[in-house]
Image (cartoon, rainbow, N blue to C red; front, side, top):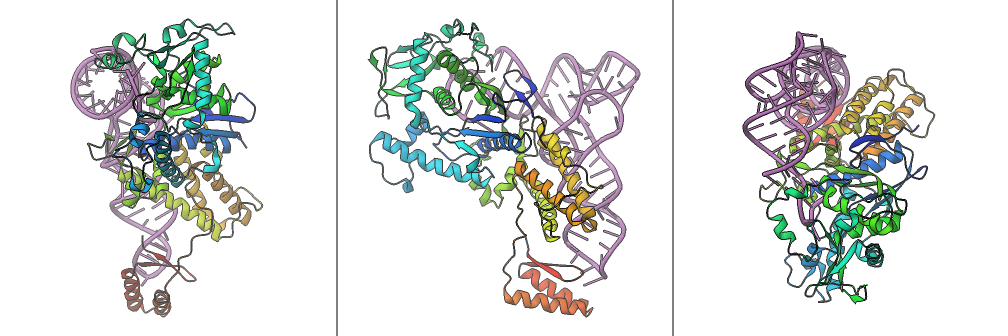
Length: 499
RNA sequence: GGUCCCGUGGUAGAGUGGCUAUACAGAGCUCUGCAAAAGCUUGUACGUCGGUUCGAAUCCGGCCGGGACCUCCA
């Protein structure tokens, strides 16, 4: 069973029914991290949103998804961070060699590893990626794209750098007769640039403030690549926007289906990526759908270091939060709304998540199997309502609402269900988990219970069976003091570490 | 300065003109020796001031508050 997926498209500013360029295959590109520091939870929201989207496309849309996420390893911040004397250089990166390119790679690989560990911890699977290209591995492709842009009259060399001319672009006619348009994703009001920004912009030797850099000429001891444009060598490195244009074209082909990123990337990053693809590759579109997630706030305030509410994943883990609870908490807000990250909400969502996990474990303990014969129980609502909410522009809050209704009804009839009905429920929940990715479908983990604790519990059970309530309660208190809780059932008890 | 978004109960967050999601927390009940778990029931809300309307959380305007973009920030 698959459903049509509806998605908000920043290009058309409306919700549209998604359909891929090639039948059955979705090619999706996500703007990934700049690896100069550890990702913060705001970054993680963007990647979790993209992951939820690609999982929805796979599980509910039935598509084969080719997901590419780039790693930006060459820009001002990675160069500064890896430069000699950088305060960001960590001891466990080893000594700096003095070779700018080698040090850059050492520095960025360090943060790339941390990044991959973080996204894995929040439920993003490495094997869901078609590729995670590093910008420095695609310099040749970027240079070729820049040459194409210059050849088409939209790029120019100035003072050792190469720029994109937005005015030439606006006059560019594509081979198919269409006219290039600057401002398709985000129309900016150039008449009212904020004061100060224009001044800063004038530090560059470009013809117009709205022009942007394609290739930055080398300064000082920066890492660089040789590059010949119009007969002159302009050693330097790629501009930020060109990276994604070139890598997305090489790895996915143009136009691909979906491009994702945070709202802040709409302009200039995505607008410029698109313009470069149009100017260089003569492709009217880079991507058919542009997906942008909103930011998050922490305790009602913009996350910032000065407010002391700036968190990376390891900060939260140190505070005792489970990364999967953080992923799950992100589901409580729609991706296009500002999400107010609060500790209270994470712990509330953690409890909700545990409740559903309990239901899954109970089904398993009743012998349910995802692969067994399935039959639907008349008192359990169809799981389709959950998927319908996901399919409707990733409406996770209402999907969760539907899911709780589903789980509650399973709980109610759990004991009277037939085996095949339990199989069906377990299979339904498993499929939901293919999108949400926070539950375990393995048997409930068994705790190794120390012999001493086991003996106390057995003694208590004996006392309880003999209706010696005082002794039974005393032993329960002893066990509690030792960190174990005991739950009585009809036939026996369950020991669990107290949480 | 320009353009734009948001403001819902203790918390998070849906909902777009009349039927007021959902989760966590709170209260009551069922079950249980008592608990725990689970289930059932339930209260409290639409920033503020005006306007439109038979009727507004939902439409319009002012104000207050939070936030975004305006050249390399998810």
